[in-house]
Image (cartoon, rainbow, N blue to C red; front, top):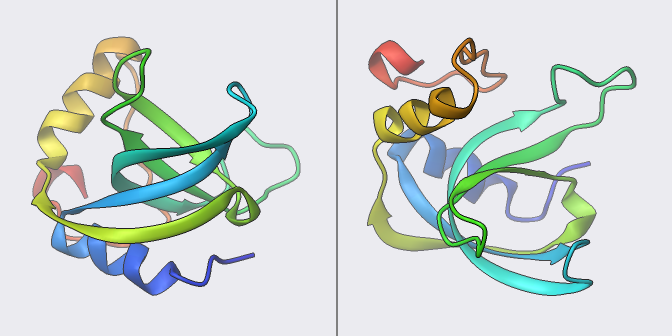
Length: 115
């Protein structure tokens, strides 16, 4: 299932533009608002039963920046932020936690060596 603002999400991948995402946090049992970078749309690589998800880099999580993957029904809203992000910085931070991680995006993009 796709969110009603799916096109905004996809265009922000290509434009390297940050998003404001309001979503239901299971941990907090409420809706939270986060500034995020869009990473990809599709199932997680480790899922036995593939479910499309919005993969995001959450810049403002209280536990520190990290990836989060959300099904469309958990997202209340997606809107553009007038701020860009650097894919190299995000990939570097992901690799700090998972050194063998290599991007295998579902959505084609031109992020130079991080495509």
